[in-house]
Image (cartoon, each protein chain N blue to C red):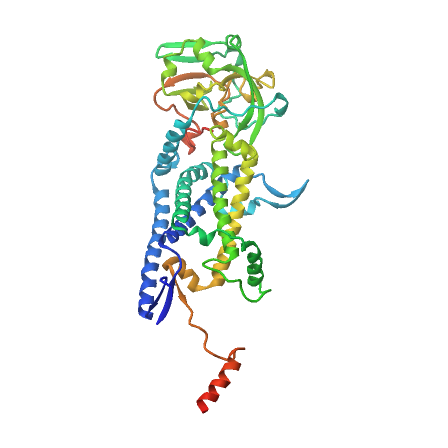
Length: 250
Length: 240
């Protein structure tokens, strides 16, 4: 007989078994109760509060990892697809008047910049071919051109504003809106984009100006920017309000 | 009186039973996520043999349009999966239990004999310690799959931050497919595991909860091959 073996009575065997199984059943009950409890918690932006808190914790953690040295992988021009997928038309009302469009940048209350498309095109142009990733799980290598947000901010003297925590972007019809953390919008691959495949943006891709932000999921690449503002609090975010992670960073 | 033998240490039983609901939630929330871009199938050209997954499957389980819910669950329970898995591997390493689980030189050959035995094509099992050769390969395989799920998962979750990892695994789209295949393998492992546990019976299942197994008493002497030789001589002696 080894030290792992033991002779016990039937009674002792039954007792040992009952004790172990009691603990086992209590733990199963805890698991079921915990699952139900989680789903009964008050919702915070369409997600149960404990999950929302955990997602915010993830954001803090991965936000620390974030570095401008981490670039989204880029591809040769030949890798870019000709037919770019159109996914979602929130904030793209048909009655949009492109002829009167100007980008509105709220610097401080009462101090608002208006910038025309030609003025934006006059800034140094940057092109990028990268794997655009939708939160649904598909991705597509696409080719975009525009001005780096960081170049734009420098040119228009937004130094004070870019020291804040977040940027908010809103479509002209206010139907779609995103909030983005400052490190991501100031990332060297983030563009105020006016070209796709070397041509002006098509209407359904957000003409005249959209955001291309390769370090985020597609939900943050707002089409047809109407206005931009800065804030230390999280600006409203369309999909965040519908249960998604605010950060949505890659 | 019963003879019992210690089988599963307390730590391993906890890791095992915590893992079960955690993986269940990971697979379930993974399904909610996968639905939003359900592109995988088995087939060639235009011919599809098996689509992952048929619409009836989604409908029966109420999967459609729950991507946000799936993501929030997945990215919270991933922590439990990771921590539990990490502690399990750490425990195996420190306690020396890994010696009972990792395959050894004989395992490959013996595992085939175990499979034949389980399919009733062969009598007798090769001698074993806690786990037989097939179990060693399966349980070590599932640890490697767990590590694989963690790494592929991390690389689709943050492909820019973990760009080197993502590239090593074959790029974003390949990594997503690998993550999916691993989940299918986990599910197949689970099914096989359940079948084997049912076949092994109550004593074995109780062992995973209580930690011990009852050692069956040696079979009573009834007409076995060797008994025929020994018993007549015994009888002769008593007759004397």
